[in-house]
Image 1 (cartoon, rainbow, N blue to C red):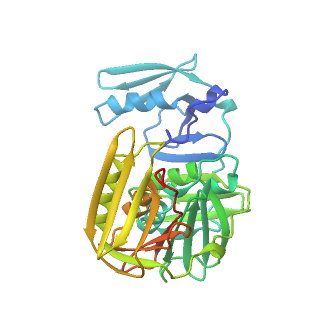
Image 2: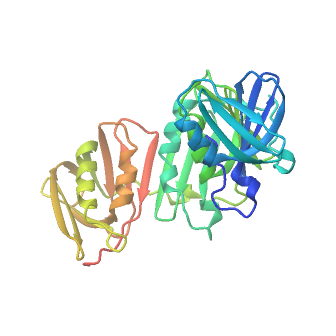
Length: 358
């Protein structure tokens, strides 16, 4: 869990390390990049208390190859560390813990509970649409808010907009609304790792609209929030107009993936035609070749022809678990809207693209 937090490229060597602290029959692991911090406690037999920092990636590689159940750590006088398990012995250099950045240990005030599975699903339905454009910092994270018993998470890169929402349920303990905050992409990725297994619930708190904190079992994750305004996405929500198709989710997804075989960075479009009770998909890449497919469908509205980025459509549909989807298209100028049939908890808006052949 610490590896994603530790900086890969940094001019501060100690940020490549994790802090190991042993006392009171537990070992504490701390990792931080100054924006995200993680504290994890594990049961241990401590004979001599102490602390040291060691290279996170190298430690992870070593522990992955050790096959025993009990591992011994011993800090030596010269800040080296012996790691032993049965007959396996590692000896690695450490850095004194004095200069390691502090990660605040949280009290119990202000936390509310969220179902881990629910949060994990909402993350998967939004994180793919987060922008990587550093010139637009407000879009470099997932927007999160809770109002009137409903959590909503939103992500956009300007070309697509993904929205996931869930009713909290009476058994959860959010007593106050959470005004919109922006959690950075890296922080969202670490939250997803935290809730991958273990408890059914995760606890969350917001600190001064600057930090969000997550607690699960004996692990605490602190994430600095993005200080920026999020666009008013509700103003651009398209109306229910255009041509709407209902189609089997797997059929559409596999057809798009077949078209995606032809795509490249320069040629990423797929042409979609709706006519005669069919949807026709085609992809042309002068460097690779071309592909075509057709699927029988039911639809309402006029025949149309429109292009989309094939990767965006795959991303939007892949996170849907329902058997069928609705895809509403508005021609070459208006956005397309993808939703699951039978659920109102997710939608993805995708802007059309002009294909090279047009």
